[in-house]
Length: 253
Image 1 (tube, rainbow, N blue to C red):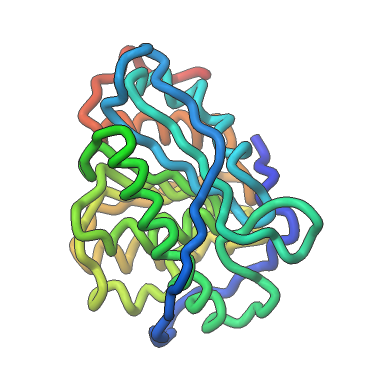
Image 2: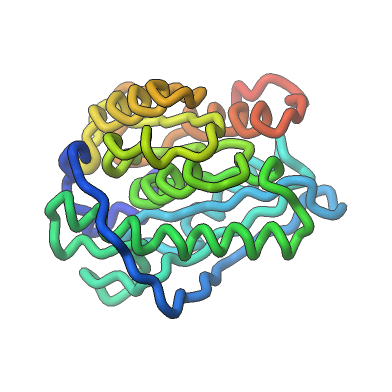
């Protein structure tokens, strides 16, 4: 299962040893994108927020709903478009620009987009009458970077963060900025030539070093994409985060 979100993505370096910068946020954009109501037809008991990769849009990861809804029939799924139009192609969205590939610019971009995603989480929680413990973030690539950055800095702990093919922006900053410790699963293809697999090891180590219940899974012979193993393990992880019993072992899709 290859995601369209890899369009135009430049290979990233490991994101260590960066210093925070003050970001002034004025008028924050309001995120919009597709959503899917609970398969059960009942009011939502959980909320899963997808964060797509650069150059893609909310339609990308919403395609995971038929699978995730098998274990989360009472979940509301939302998949916002990133706050900016993708600036390296005529279509798509981004959380932050990749025009300047240096690491400091990535940190600045993440810090600027962070409050936008944070506000969206609050908005969706209020809309569906849910609490932080009922919310999970699922990201791919740049969307994983955003999910990891925002999720551990929220005042109230989320249910979990599922990060596909992503990285932690400036892991050196975690110890001083961590506010909560949601469980985290990072998954990465062993042959990813966009975001190096070393980013998984670095990210998991940084999270674990700050007391976060984080684990990583490297998928052999997989590039910058998802496959059945990623989806099935993601299903199991989300069910575990929400304390939902699995209907049966998810051995096939």
